[in-house]
Image (cartoon, rainbow, N blue to C red; front, side, top):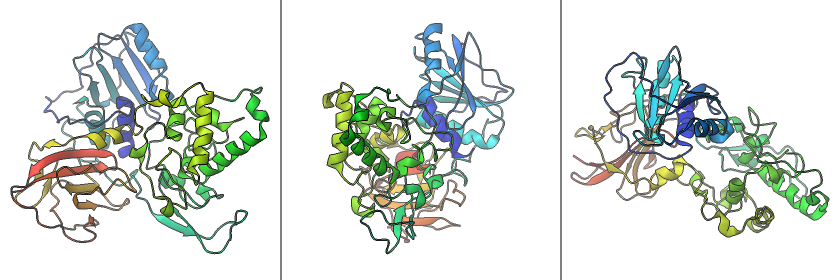
Length: 464
């Protein structure tokens, strides 16, 4: 599964919460992690990995009734099967993640599986994202590595230029259509994104899951008779179809069905958007953690002001705000909606603490970290913004050194020498060059990612 298991664990165990600073514990070897006592168990299919998992309701706040309700309305619309007093019994597991340990809200997630290559990513998903305590099974006891191997990894953005299929009305067919392959990218206005870029690669860049629409349009809705309004809705649909958003929000493109809202929804497709999603798209809720191109590099489409790329912010916002108000809300009602991005938001706000367990840069200039292999290595000045997603957040000011490997290449392990190219490793900052020497006694930030959005180390070290 590679990183698909880690993304799935991070999304479901944390409800897309954020990264914590948990340290690995030296657990005693065991044949199987002891199952916590619980009022019930919820068996569900993880909508990301499509694998079965099991949640145990342990804390005193849970009753059979509240646990059953939680199970039936599980994260991201993936309801499970609840058994009062049940357990999570499997022939073999990767381990158990204890979340909110020792509190009234404690719960545990049991991960069935028999593939040792999933151990490291499952542990990381539990400890880094869910802020839980991972109790490995005998299969995963002492397992390491695998945190960023080649396979289902984040495909870095690339620009592809193709001959136009046809010229939209009023446009010339001369020249090529150049489109970035990235979740925040758009092709030319009036064209379809999937004709000029790869949705398959886009789907590696954001956790995807199939989910039913928030609502459908009633046949007697008065808006269906408003030609001017329907023209605006059709224009907004064309704007979405020109963007990479369509890869997850179209019945014909999303692999397992659209993720909630979709442009082919019968009636008025805006009705398929949830209230919070509409607030984000209208610019009432912050979604800046998802990253954005400047319009001049994105075929005129802007996503810096609204949550949906558009060539006309005022026109798009007027339509979406009108829908927000039609649902009975005012702009002030969106004030309490948290910033979108889940772990990306928490990583942005995380303040690095002192490195432990030998992490940092040693006397030989080698980067040392724990938790598995990595695809991105950073050395930052203290006080720098934490790295985020491309295209505009992955090289923050204060980046002294950034090295990565191509998507198809294997990740690198702890012990990489600062500035030393090895195998397919490449230096992005400074571009193709070795970094300046670190000043002995000065403090720097080590930031190591198993993949985009999946941190392994984020700590302060003193240069030897």
